[in-house]
Image (cartoon, rainbow, N blue to C red; front, side):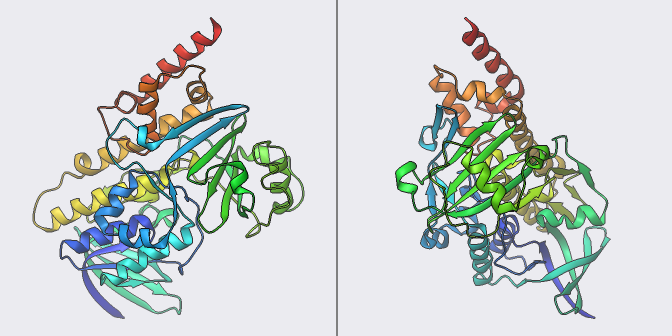
Length: 411
C-alpha cells in the first residue's frame, strides 16, 4: 500500500479546511488535504458574515475572492408583515469588517480549494477516509480514492474539517444530538429578472413568514437568487405535488416575494434538507481537532455556519502550529472554550428567533439605536466581543430586553 508522511492532514476542502490548510502552510509545515467529494459541489450556507473575512484575509484568499466578483453584502433585512428591521454592518458596535459576500457555494468553495493548490498544498479530491489509527498524537489515516485505490497518510496532527461528513466523530463515536428541535428546508436558485423592482441585492432578506417558519432571499451576482423556506417538518407535510410545485405554492403565499418570483425559472429542482443540528462530545483529542460544522451546526437563520467554521479553523490552525513547534497548547481553554462561546452566543439568538422573543426586539416600534448597534455586531458574526453586552451576557440580555419591549407594548 502506498504511504506518505506529512505534518498536518486536513480532512475536508470546504471553507473550514481551506482556511486551516492555508494558515498552517504559511508556517512552513507540510500540509496535505483530502476531500471525499468532487468539486464543484452544491452546499447551502451562501450568505457570509463580516467576521469570516478576518479568516479569509489571514489565509490569503481576499484577492482571488475579490477578483471573482461575488455579490457584496452590506447588511441584513428582517421582514414581518408590514414591519421592516434593516441592519447595515457599517453601524455595528464592534470594530471590524463591515461587509462580506453572498456566494454560490459551489463556485466559492472551488475557488478556495484552487487557491490552496496554487499555494502548493496537495489536495486529493474524491478521496474518503476509511480508518484512522492514533499512536499518541501521531496518526496513520487510510484513504480510498474513487477508483478504489488505498493509501496511508502518516501525520503528526489531523484537522478534521469534514463538515456534514463528520469523519472523526463517527469513527470515535463522538456524535451527540443537538438541543435544537429538528427543522427542514425547501429551496432553490431562482432567475431573478425582477430584482431591481423589489429590493437591494446587497443584503440577505429574512422574512418571518409564519410562527416557526421563515424565508431566506439571497441575491447572487450571477443573476440568480437563493430562496428557501425553513420550518418544522410538519409544516411541509401540508404540501402536495413535486418539490417544484410545493415551492411555487409557498412563494405565492408570501406577499413580499410572490410577484417577484411569479412564474420565474428555477435553476434546479427544489431540494430539501432536514435534521441538520448535531454536536459532539468534545472538539479535540490527542492528535486531532475538529473545526467547522463537524463541531456543531446550529441553524441557517443567522448565516452563522461558515463564520463559525472558518473562525474555528483559524484558531485551530494557530494552535496546531504552536504545538508542532514544541510549545504546550491547552486545547480546552485555547480552543474549545472559545469556539463554544461563539456557538452558545449564536444558539441564544437562534432559540430566541424561534420562540418569538427576538422578533419582539427586532420589530419594536421605537428601537434603541445603541442596542441595535450591539445586536448588529452579533449578526455580523462578532460573537466573541465581550465588550458587547449582548454578547457577554447574551442569554440574560436578550431575555431582559424582550421583557421590557413587551411591557412597553402593553402600556
